[in-house]
Image 1 (cartoon, helix red, strand yellow):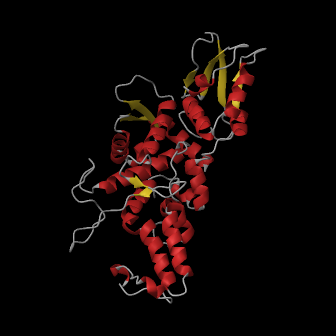
Image 2 (tube, rainbow, N blue to C red):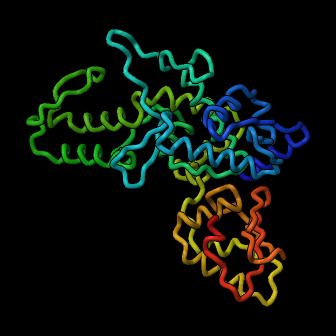
Image 3 (cartoon, rainbow, N blue to C red):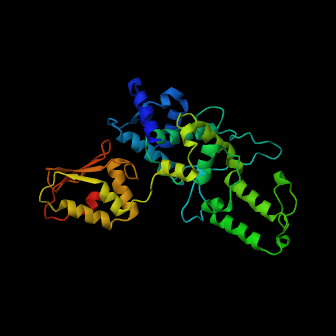
Length: 358
């Protein structure tokens, strides 16, 4: 997959760059708008990102930062496009459910009266654009810092015609999964006086059909009124030639490709550091000590400060720590386009932990 993505990027290198103008204050809206109106040929071009009202030349760092901020905002809890279960210790995200249509009306797969700035198809255009953003992140080998639910990746790979299981339900809502398991363990489920949904027949739940009822509960929770939005994401995701290669992947493998390893150990981070220009200095040793003392969240923020991504660079790529001569009074300076940190010589003076976490 990596070799194929490199071939695609090289083939597009001579066809110019894709100029994207986005806003930090409305990152989801502006990124979705740019991806929604791009044609398929434009999607393959190398991005050139400009944050409105800010100076800066994109040599790769601003592109990574755009993806990073976009997906973090998308799954921050403040965006109405995705949701997680409040009871989950490690939340995973799915598109929010479509609201139920008014009594007597059929749902049409879009939110009536809410066009999200993309035209008559409502929020489905936004979800299709998000599918395009995920596909572009794969093509550019930029990890996505978002814990999407496995069912989302199953839909992206093979569509929504499948039956989720209780393990997948538990990954989204532990309380709902626990309720189903307790129900399945009961000797007499009739005493609960449960009924199937009207769309499933509306009949009573009995010991004979309780397994089918539990399966349908999982399907309604994980797919159900999310299906049209998930399928919209799949349409956008399919606008790239990488899909034919990705169909060979399992859900777990696609999750690893899209999200990368969201756990950054001290050993892995130190192995990625290429420290240059420090001679007879204690600063490199002090830096390694600080990395070992950091929490996973602090290491992710440290990596993000240097690379604009919360995961380590893939393959043989390294994080370069370069000696600079401006003195210990100044803070380190990051160059996210080149995964490089300019670090002053601190000598025998202890390197301040706050300097590496600015």
